[in-house]
Image 1 (tube, rainbow, N blue to C red):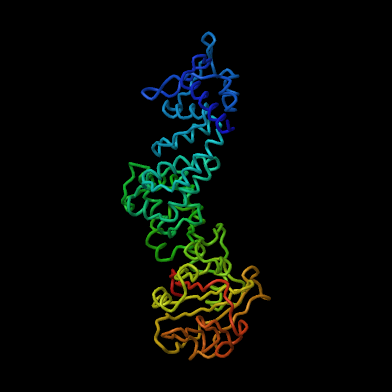
Image 2 (tube, one colour; image 1 turned 120 degrees about the vertical axis):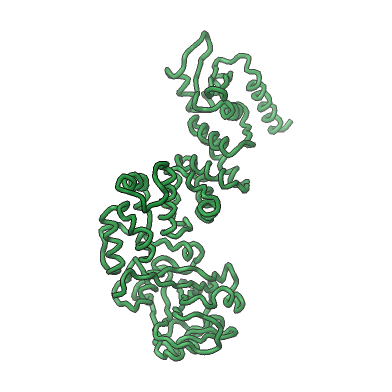
Length: 468
């Protein structure tokens, strides 16, 4: 007879004890109304398996009827407690239940302090990789968001599902209005929430209106009373919206008419930022969310974006942490492949772009092309292009090389095959060569040894509030 056989025999006996419970000394009254029931149990097993019951059955939370302890749990539904009690006795758990049932099971397990059961349920659902409906995801996310630390594994799992594809919940179904305060706030606080800041603002207003049934959806009809109600509803969200990343056009048409919803100092700082971008603001400015670049690019980091933005503006002083550009990753060579065909499909006719290449060691080289690649087969003329080199980990004057174009007529070679380059041969992207000719300074040794295939990033200038 093996040890496994002995364990199975023990579990069978405990299961009989659970099913029959003839010598019970505890009755647990679970649930209320139609979803309530009485469960017979043994105090010794309850105390051993749960620190919650060890404390509860030794306190004045219970009452005695003869030799039997009566314990009430009206906040846990009977069908949920039945699953919990079977687990306590046998270690067996049935997760063939609805998403609401799973949420209620997690909350009950937390209350009864069954940590190992909570961890099992979370890991089981993550590994299951089930295709949950949008409605089910919202329901469970509301529950998880209230206890993020306890249910962290599952909370992060569902938060990422929503954050990575918000269109499913915000555009296609509008189920986001069913999000509770903590759930919606946690999404906005997440740096990987893949939604433009102006869309976050628009959806926040929709959500706030849905929470106040007396408020008209037509914001032009709002008077002081309506403004105050909505302002109170969205107050906790305002510090987590990156207003300084919203274009002046969107501010003027979509935020300015409702500026009474913002703290006065914040609104003044937003206008000041548009007028004098390098000015200091009293409002705390959140780090720029560049999820479309940073989420997929392993080469270009946030500080690199700030520095390159500064070079584009041809400024000499320390770089600003509120750059005037939007960035979008067009091509990740490691992910998408890096050949002429892929480059043409993803990067032609996109406007200004950055090429970034991670070399073996820790250096990054690249270049800024302010003109669209389009395979014209000729040189493109500009005074604004540059090539660069820097240490990926340490961005300072001793590790940075900035080389601006000196022969504008040969700034960019817009090849039709595999000879795309900055200058005639200052940085040959596909041929992996660097020599000095049409730019001020050489940025690397002659041949390039890639550690990561190039990333191509689109650069789009933010609009200005005033043309001064």
